[in-house]
Length: 235
Length: 322
Image 1 (tube, rainbow over the protein chains, first blue to last red):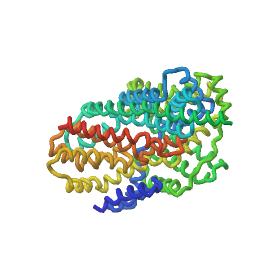
Image 2: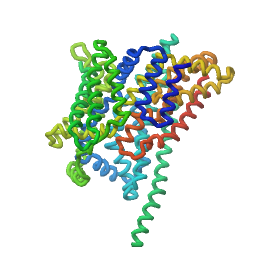
Image 3: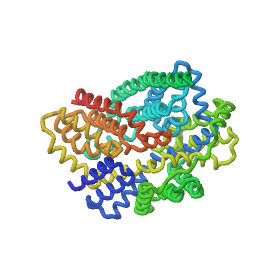
Image 4: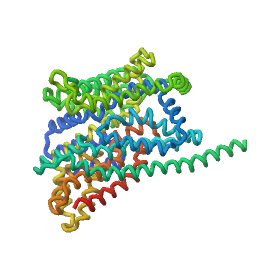
C-alpha cells in the first residue's frame, strides 16, 4: 500500500499548485525508494525515461523556420487569405480544421499538423481573421477564447483520430501489454475498428461546440462594438 | 540509412547553440539558469544516443534530469525580450511576398507525408532509406530542414542566426513545460516497477461489487480518466487500470469483448488528457505558444467535450462490449 504515496504526492502537488516538474520528480523518487529501488536505480529510471520519450520534443526542430517565416509576415498573410473566403466563419473554419486533423491522424499523419507548425502560424491567424472580417477588432478576452478553441481543435482531432490508425503508439501499447501479460492474441485492426464510434462522437460533439462559438462571438462582439460606438458617439 | 538518432543530435545541437545565445542575452534577468536548463537538455539529447544502445550508463543522465527539474522548479529560468520585426514591417512584407510565404510552411507537412507513405518503402542497397519505425519523426525533421533551406533562399536571409533566435524565443516562452512529458513518462515507468498497478487493483477489487457489470464499466472508464488526469498520460494509466479492473473483472469475470473493452478504455483515458495541466505538451505548451494570459485556456475549451466523450465511451462499452 505504501507505494501509493507516490500517487498521493502527485495529487497533493496538483492541489497546492506546485511546479509540476518538481512534483513529478519528488513523486518518482519517493515511489522508487518506497518500492525498493536503490537510489542508483531511481536515477537510471529518470535517465532511461528521458531517452525513451525524446520523440515528444522533436517538434522543436520546426520552431526556427516557423519563427523565420513569422518575421516576414506569415501570420499576417494567413489573415489575408481567410479574408477572401466570405462564408468561412471562425467556427466553420475550426470545424474544418478539426475534421482535417482527425482524418490526418486516422491515416497515420500525426506529425503533419500540430501546435507549433500549424496552429500558431496558420490556424490561429485564420480563425482570428475570420472573426475580424465580420466584427472588426477583437477584445483581448475574445482573442484568448478563439486561440484556446483553436488549440482544442488540434488536440481533440488528434486524440480521437489517431486510434483509428493501426500503427499508432496507443494501439501498439494495448496489444503489446495485453499480449505479453495475458498471453492472448489481439490484432491492432480489431482495436482500431472500436475507435471509430468514439471518433465520430468526438467530431459531432466538438464540431457542434466550435460552430456554437460563432453565436457566442456574435453576441459578445456586437455588444462590445455597440458599447465602443456609443462611447464614440458621446464624445 | 537516415537514422532517428541523427535528428536527436540535431535537436540537441540546436538547443546547445540556443543556450549559448541565452548566456549572452542581457534582456533575460535569469539568463544563466535559463541557459543551464536548455544546455542540459541539449547535452542530454546527444548523450541519450549512447544510453539507448547501452554503451553509456543512464545514471548521469538521470541526475541531469533532476538538476533540470530543480532549475525550472525553483524559478531559476526566465525569458528575454524577443528580437523581431514590427507589425508594420510584417504587414508590408506579407503584402510584398503574398502567398509565397506559405511555400516553406507547407513544405513541412508535405515532406512529412511523403516520407510516411512513400519513402518509407524505399530502400537503397538492401537497406531502407529511413530507419524503420521512425519514418514520421524523420519526415518531420527532414521537412523542417527542407523548409528552412527553402525559406532562407526565398527570403534572401543569409544569417542563420535569425531563425535560431526566433526559435529560441519560442522555446523560452514554453520553458519548463517542454520537459514535463518526458518526466511523466519516467514516473509511469517507476510506478510500474514499484507495483502501483497491483496495489490499485487490490484496492479496486475490495470496493467493487462483484455482480454489477455497469458499475465495473464505470469504475474502469472513470478510473482511466482520473488516473490519466493525475499522470498526464493515458499510456501510464492504461497498464495500471487494466491490470486492476479491465482484464480481471470486465474481460475475465463478465466475458467482455477484449478489443472493445481495451480500445474504449484507452479512449476514456484520452478524455483525461484533455483536462489536465500534466499533459503539458497538449495543454500548457500551446497556451505558451499562442501567448495566452490564461494558461488553462485550452483546458477550459476542452472540458465540456471531454465530459461528454467520457460518457460516450462508457455508453459504448456498456452497450456493445458484452
